[in-house]
Image 1 (tube, rainbow, N blue to C red):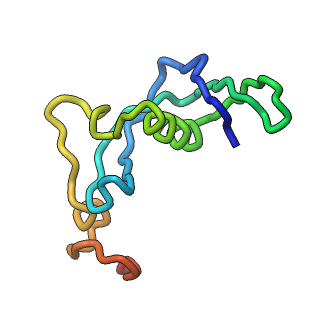
Image 2 (image 1 turned 60 degrees about the vertical axis):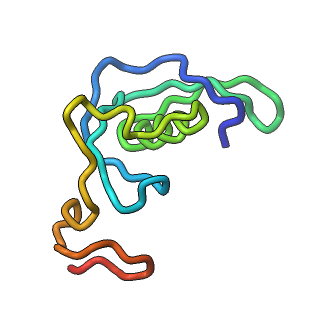
Image 3 (image 1 turned 135 degrees about the vertical axis):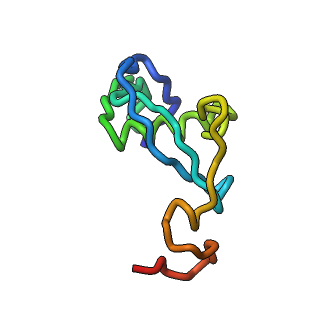
Length: 104
């Protein structure tokens, strides 16, 4: 649990990957995120702590911290890029439907 999180360090080395979000559940977009984040936060016992997050977890934390700042991943996409439909992302040729498992 991260209480009052604040990014205190982010590597300049990034990775571009598709991201999804419940705010846009039927599309995915390519977003560059830092490979390493250091986040200062308060623990449940009130202590200040800095936690390091790497790779996929750094992406997840950055995505969620953006929400706390009122940002969506679409605002982080490079100019000229647009989100793609989930069916194109998954390569199954079918629109996403809640509760249906993806084709294998």
